[in-house]
Image 1 (cartoon, helix red, strand yellow):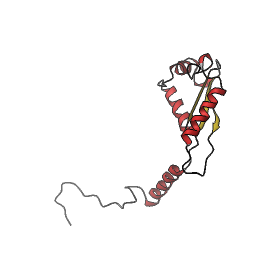
Image 2 (spheres, rainbow, N blue to C red):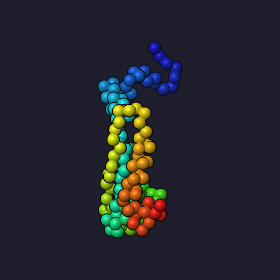
Image 3 (cartoon, rainbow, N blue to C red):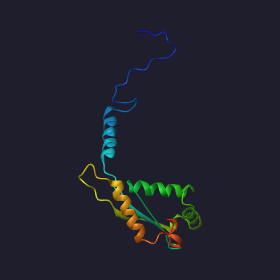
Image 4 (cartoon, rainbow, N blue to C red):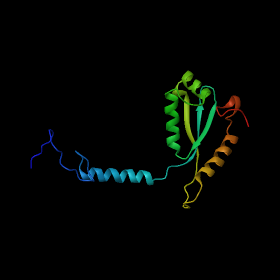
Length: 143
């Protein structure tokens, strides 16, 4: 069969594979993506401690490792929203700061469990326990 088009027509590609990628790799990739999406990401509370002056930031998130990674990334890009923490990061360097996980929200079997509410109450308790306000921290004025 000849075509009157000025360019060659590509052969059809099977729906589960892309050009140059075997179907088995595409299937394995989809399985890994599904496994990641179904996995439980731990929620919790973390601290960032400035070892040069002892000031502490207490934060938290539903995807703890992702939140800490984003914070490091923003600080390195000089775009973090906490200006005092950003200034100290620039002045002292990343090597003077220590990230540590303080507490994690326990995984529950209940599909309706409110991880956000649990995290908020946990974060409030840890911010009362750890001196992170005023001159001793990066979390703003004491409440």
